[in-house]
Amino acid sequence: MMDMFPSVLTYIGAMTMGIIEFALGLYLFFGIHRRIIPTVMLIVMSFFTPLTLWLAIDNPISDCGCFGDALVLSNWETFFKNLALLIAAISIFKWRKVHLYKIVSSKVDWLVSLYSILFIICYSIYTIRYLPVFDFRPYHIGADIAKGMTIPEGEKMTTYETTFIYEKDGKQQEFTIDNCPTDSTWTFIDAKTRVKEKGYEPPIHDFAITSVNDGEDLTESVLNDDRYTFMLVSTHLAEADDSNMDLINEIYDYCIEHKYNFLCVTASPDKDIDSWTENTGAEYPFALMDDITLKTMVRSNPGLILLKKGVVINKWSVNRLPDEYQLNKPLDKLLIGQLNPKTLPHKILMVAGWFFGPLAVFILCDLIWISWKRRRSKKEDKENETKE
Image (cartoon, rainbow, N blue to C red; front, side):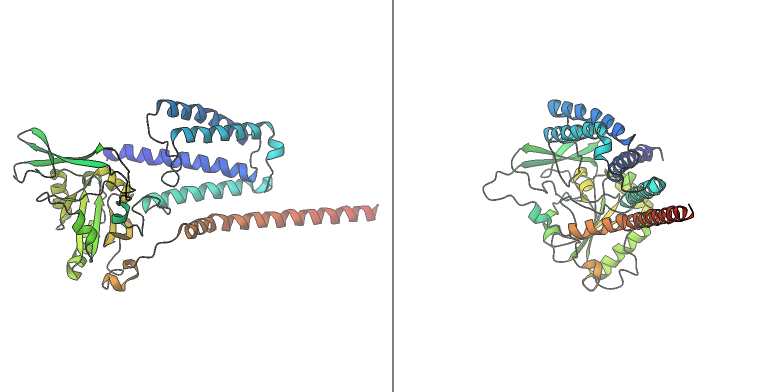
């Protein structure tokens, strides 16, 4: 339980920051709290602009990750972006009455604010519990992994070396993939991938699968197999959610029945794999992969990926695995076994509909209410004039 505490704090911190940024942008757009919000925006940008200047000069990280994988900015690009936003914040702060137009009346400010904050909280919880709605990583549904590993003609290839750390008699030793020990007295501890020589870096550059049993490289066989392959992805099995393990075992039985492949890929040491097998009754085979690659593949621990000839057909979080009712036929006769990736514009329209649909109703009701009050006020004024 204590091991999960830092992870929970990370999620809460990330959600809180996203909610604050979303709320500030929304308040600016609708002209809510016109006295307070420009001041808050100025304070925020006055903090982040010099911070990103330091990041650009000192370069402790390659990029700040402001927009995730959707748009990767260098540290200098991030600084100039924040500089432009700081200038805009100063302008809004100084001329707030000119720049900020109030779209909704003060009486429904609270309703728009409450709905918007509840929406972004629910959206954040949904993406954490299930999977991100927008997946800009190289392992998104529809991605061809082999193609993502391709080096354009004439480009120099970055070379990597994966080493495996084993332990024997209390001493740890590193081995390459060519000289992994087959002696059972050695215990696997960890796997590391490092750059030997920098070159062109394709979107997917560290996808390597190694069998736990004999150290065999399974990468090509998985990517070139015409059959469906289920990959259970878990960065660290000791931290994985095992609440749906019976369902995972049923999926493995389904694969055996229909002669599909099933493989659990992890960066866990042997003792964690043994513990997982004992606690969950797992009978499926295990293989090793780089932990960063596993985190990139699916944002769930564990998560499930369906491949066919190296193409990502589908993905599930541990909280939304396909059950016996969905897997009641061979995959080629089921919708979940067909490649049907939703396009980015489709997803944008879908999320925009979720958010702006109810919001438009609030605004429309507010406009109708204001219009009715104006007409009533004019009518009362005319009646008063007639009486006089």
